[in-house]
Length: 319
Length: 247
Image 1: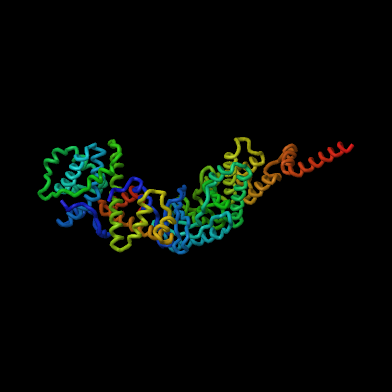
Image 2: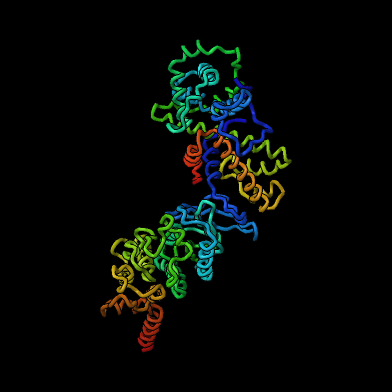
């Protein structure tokens, strides 16, 4: 047999390093993506015969004891209950032989937020995507779940235009301590607890970076960072509409008390802006209000003006 | 010197054999020969590539040096001096090889071919073909070169064993799926395409692939364990060569 090529050796090395879940229900086939906290694989659910995405934490979090596994499953049930068109739910969780936790999720076919933004340069379309992200997170907030790691790479736009928030792997169920994957966080065994830092710099609220107590407002901060990300990709610096800048600033307030209370408020603000209504974060002067009013009611105004112009014309010609 | 180091077709590979090095050092004559044969099979390609690219020897010269080194290692029990506490075996072997090449004229006179040191049957033409287009390596890149060639040798051996093992069980199609998906050109094969081509459901393709990969990994790890000087070295090698944390 000829010696294997470098490329084949590299591929076989990757194949050999694929985790092998112990119960044989899931087989991992290839790496789909690499994140700070875990690696996502394309997998196959042999029981239900369907493709799945399996996220495996980088760090082992603890012994695979029955009590530990049961806790993971109990918490996974909460996450799995987040049935919303914008949320990719967790189907299952488990622990590999080496102590790393894995989560089984629906495999989403689509493109990342960045790819979607590059295909949709119109600000309103982009804000529409973000509004749906906020709606999905708002749904979780109403059930007491905080995502904790909202960022562009965790948002996908599906083949049918649906917007999906991925990776609830570090989500926290308020009032219940850490959620399943708390386990998926970067902290080593025995160190994952209420004080552990999980999240992504740049999208992480200050209180999260400092491992302080956090609630829905940490996600509000991340939504603000996402809004800033979308605005930066859409318009020249400083040229973003003032109401949008005000929404962003309120989301990104250092003091959680100065932010919106939850994602529902953020979603409503984005909706207000898109429909031409006044946003709560921004106190506007009379000129701004007039300008917004004209933009909002442009069509009826144009119709009225056209009607009046016609009447005037008819009156003049009729003399 | 052990028998020819050709293909291992049909050979079974028990998971719990003692380290090759232990067997070379402590085994009876037959066991020592068998163990050395296994070691030579795993290392001759890295040795040849190393002599070609690091020492920049011509192919004919490199062939002689490879044969000579392995012959001398057997005849003079080079590897008996290996101490797992001091270095990895791969590093030890490379240092031995460096010394051997430096002293080659002396070594060639000392190690007579024949007389209980049979010449290995090695496919040098094949090994030379695999080096086509490779640049010579500077001294600082030697460890990487040796590691890469060892990985190639390890994986090539495991693929051969997997093929033989599956053929012996009449499961050639399992190997075909593995061969097409993991050994062929990347990005040219899809599960659906393979399923259509082989006339089986996609589920069966992924199941076959998983079966083959799982056994392939076992074969690689078994061989790596056998070729390591200690359990610690085995784990370190698995981590460095395969990205596997077996702690």
